[in-house]
Image 1: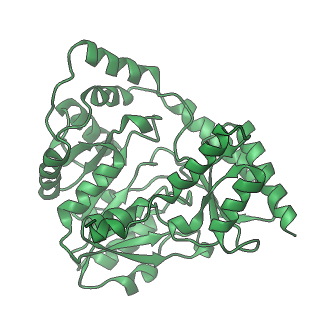
Image 2 (image 1 turned 180 degrees about the horizontal axis):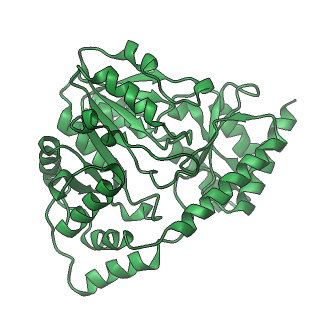
Length: 381
């Protein structure tokens, strides 16, 4: 018999739609894919060369299960510099991408039946990972009129004695929203007398184009309750390298390291040396290119009457299509079938009536894709 928990988990809707688009592409169709949440740039050569050098030098053996010391020290230095914190290498565990960092964390803190607050719209893997860790996801619907930025009043009715953690994601996937400091101050006040962890998914932290990135770890009263999840994937275009990490209080990081030692040992050794070089790579070019594309998409959207969440960060545009079809899955499938444009339906993120497009694509592809979207909605009426 298959595990009931595993049977209850749905496949990633992001990967499903992308797979359909790839099949159509292989069949010879001119498909525009605005689905994948990854940069279209090649990994910087300095990172590739550092990994290659490590391999040539024989650095291909097991490492400490938490990651090589040099990398963990660099990560601590990187986090401390921008957050006024005092983490050290012992607070860091380097994992197989941000996904394993998150799953390790959930395994470390959850007992069967513990509840985890998920703020919708939310990244598709949060619910699945909570269930796999024998927890219960509790979905909190946020408001479009607030750009899907949470308020304490949104969250409080969903808290219970079983609440163990709240997952925060800023800059946000899928909305592109960036949570202000005030949001975290509200949450700090809300949980100050509760034993609740704040899991802060910060993988898009460098991709903030307006305003300023803020981490809950910057608030002293939240520091011992905060577990940061981060990765090299988005910022340094290293999605396939699978290098992520968690930053946690020592009592948690020790358990995360123990879990990882039994599940995967250390992550790929040369990839760790590649990641070590990332901190010395100037990424201004990539950030400027993303911002250029973001501005293009915002300007292009003026050609339609579609409403969307204003994207302050990440590389997504979350578009309200409910006036055309409240069944966003049907909308996305018809869009792919009739216009050969692949997007992600919002219901996969817990937000019906929306679609997500990724602007981690060239302006030429974005123009082609948005033109097809506008043609489709104009053909509905």
